Image (cartoon, rainbow, N blue to C red):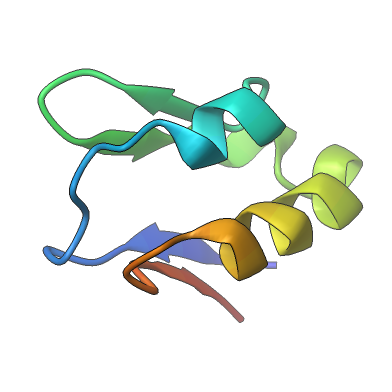
Length: 58
């Protein structure tokens, strides 16, 4: 699965709180690609929880 964060990200931290192994927040949300496949269910949960729809998972 490929995960990207759009420029719409507001750095609310929801993704990081759901799946800190994949998402981290600094100035902008960052994706740790190495951990995506092992955490696919949590990534999908983070996609659904994003209040602005900034996480794209394909």
